[in-house]
Image (cartoon, rainbow, N blue to C red; front, side, top):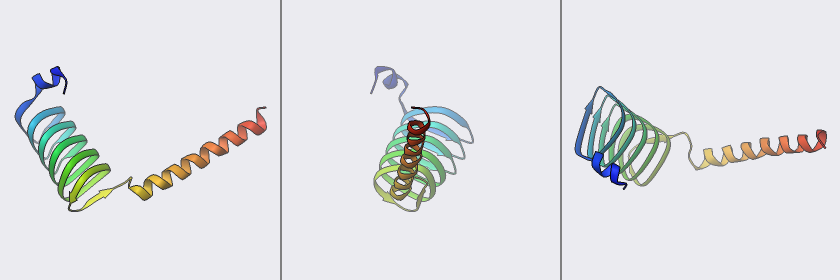
Length: 124
């Protein structure tokens, strides 16, 4: 952790019905809020939208996330673009799971190859 992050690190942060840019804290409690980024040891989040969530232990209910990095995720009804966790308990709906990533890769590679072939044929 950088020296500037250590200075901004709080022991505990409680956010209710607010919009916040970035939170650095050991323990974060968030309810009915929108947060761009959370960096925490433990996070308890309820009815909130989070952009980037990095924490050791996360407990969420009825939330929407863009990206989640955690060791332990305990949840009920969470939607996420990308979730990377060692242990997940509960219902997490991700947009980009293994199958979604595979399909995205095949489609992207196909389109890339199509344009490459067109370039070779018409622009030699």
